[in-house]
Length: 381
Image (cartoon, rainbow, N blue to C red; front, side, top):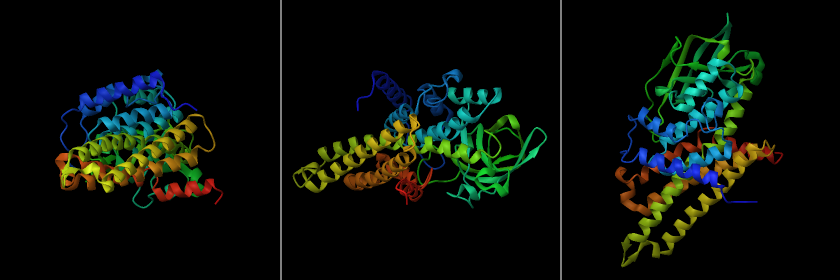
């Protein structure tokens, strides 16, 4: 068992860290009305993030899950806010992975090539107001038409929707078939019948814009179907394994940056004649932050390693790592805010932003409760 990254991994991580940090230097705190910009997206693309796990044949990095997670972790540490690397992760994992493994033909290759270069931004349209975690309850439909399908329905909380050039969406093609009645599609933004609603005002992750998307008699050619008809449930599960394994790495990076800033603050801040770090109540809280972070990191690396090897225990490991990382991000965010005191509550310090960005982590890509169900099933319960 070797815990040292390879020289190649170190080089990639260092390159991403330097490029992202320099490219986004001086970015001010974000408001809910300030989503990502194309210049910021270009910075992430130039760092190799938007195509990290996409095939080299379309300009991607051809990386596996663990190496992809390492780059997302580096981006999470280099960015002052979590929204932009989160947006990249949604683009890459929830959208790029299903196109990579289930798409066929020139049209799909063109989309992948654009996604890898950063010219194409992808959004994942699966969640519905009436379905939530119950994907089998989705109401959007896709009916066969000459040469393709006609989509109807509304998706909510579509990450990147306001900026997306392509939407990976799922719809019911056979209502009587349950899990086997869902089909996946890649739908270009310019397709007639797509309406993107206003940007949703979220508590955090502001640079990752989200909106509702409505499909009204939207005709999609069969060439843009992902996988076979009725395979959408399996396509979704496969892409979610990658997203649940790799996306939380963004939080590992943000927690590492957060912990470094917090430790520096309590060393330098003096109260009652000595540094805050000299008080056991403070030093033990910092120690707990380090323990949560390192434990979560080990679980995530192991989960990605198992995913790369196609091991059957990967599903349980991924569920454990997602719970550990996202709940640690919230707990560490609360501790950092407490240790910074009143200054941590000011938006200009960025301390409260790390906490706000962490809050949705326990909800997206399957709630903590859903992950614990997966873990319980792994124990035969």
